[in-house]
Image (tube, rainbow, N blue to C red; front, side, top):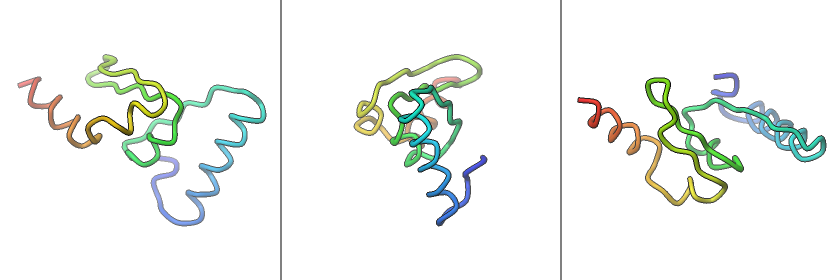
Length: 79
């Protein structure tokens, strides 16, 4: 992950992405396994085995099960 690290560098990258998104009114795709980063997004699309399994707008993602719980459930469902 481009911003998989911690600390000031990650914070600066996330801040820059948010600023570009807002100021230029662009769509920015961030691919991550980090639930904290995902919760910052306006929209979260979860993919498993190349298929969209969840597509949620801001706030809905944070209030649902954790990414880890979701991944475990998806793996269990696949056998």
